Length: 216
Image (cartoon, rainbow, N blue to C red; front, side, top):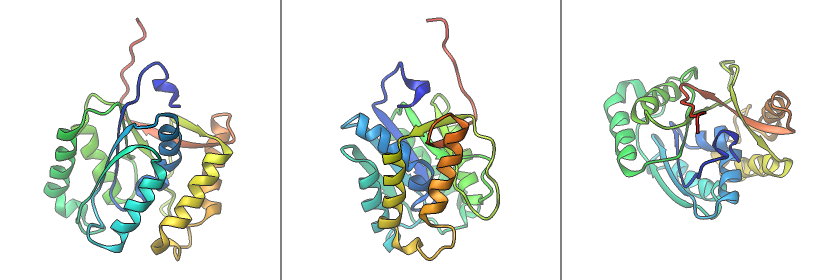
């Protein structure tokens, strides 16, 4: 359960990624926890690249597994990998189309501090399109060494953390050759974030802006 939203309903979630597998790597455990706790929750997901390829097929099967029992609505666009700045208008249009379709209680997106230009560009689009929403910026470990100091945590049970690592290996065979794509990396980061929030495992998030209502 998201601690910040413990007193409110979470009926609609938006999850976005620049590439297939971004959402699952950055927030797969959180999605599992939310969807298992709230059967029928609506998840509107957008991925900007990979449309029409084997990666889209991987993503559809994977996100269905990461969102068990949810009303999942996934769009996979066809922007070229690594070229989001050159396709800004198309990316902006995709995000605006998503915004027109839903009024989410929670948004899961890349961090604005992410070193990858596609992740960072999408993150900037999200904070302008979803101005009055709780936007949690997930992290993706990579060679850039851009992991920061997160301010929000979602504790994960050992079962959820292990399930996330297993689903990542099972549903994205196209990524298994990458040296960083393994169970040890995913659980290792989750263990570190768990230590930081007094849990066994956790996913961590950046928050660009947060509005509090402490008077009621």
